Every structure is written in C-alpha cells, then in structure tokens.
Length: 148
Image (cartoon, rainbow, N blue to C red):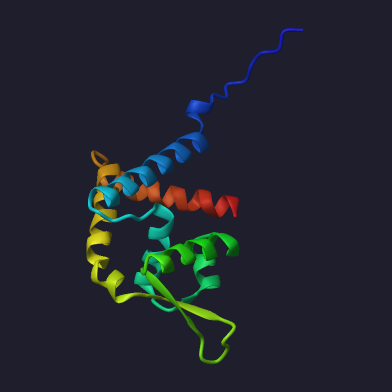
C-alpha cells in the first residue's frame, strides 16, 4: 500500500519557526550583553526586568511572571545573589517568605541593560513594518491564549 505523505514540513511549521526565532533572539541578547561587558543570560535578564518593573517581589511571583518552576527560579536568583545583582530580604509579616530586591549596583546599570534589550528588539524587527509587527505581537498573544 502506497501511503501519501501529508503536507507537513518541519521547516515551515509555526512551532519550528517560533522556536528558532526565539532561540536566535535569546542568543543575540546574550551576545549584546556580553559585547558590552555584562555577564548576563536571557533567563537572568527576565528576572531583573521583572524587578525593574516592580522591585521586592516574592520568588513565587517571579516564577509565575517568568513562567518558570520554583526550582528554576530559585537557581536563577541564587546565581544573581552570588553576583551581587539581587538580594533576598525576609518579609516582615512572614519571615518564611523572602522578597527579592535589586542591588544598588544593578539599579545603576538598569538603563544600559534596557537599552541593550531594546537594541536587540530593534535588530530582530529591522525591515518589518510597524503595523505588521503590531499584528504579529497580537497573533503571538493569541497563540499563547490558545495553548494555555
């Protein structure tokens, strides 16, 4: 029996293209940080970026906002603490809960880090019409909603 292969091609699939684009953006951001003397990974940047938005979050809040498990976020925070980028402070009402705060050293380089993140986004979206980019972002939001 001769079975006809369907029209699925990995290289043309939405999942493959999303994964590759994400991988390349993360790699470029890591390189942009490294080229500017910031030893920072994309995953660490996510945590810092959330703290730039709202300093003093719990690990659980950071895990939820970064869509990571507790063990993963704990490791990221431990590494950031070792590098003096964040600090843990026990919550006054419940000392079992730690709040994560940016250090003064990290606050001092916030604008540089955000500029490098913006530069990466600009590199990735070069030659894309702003209206098309806006549509693309809405479509990506819908894909996420569809799969939650």
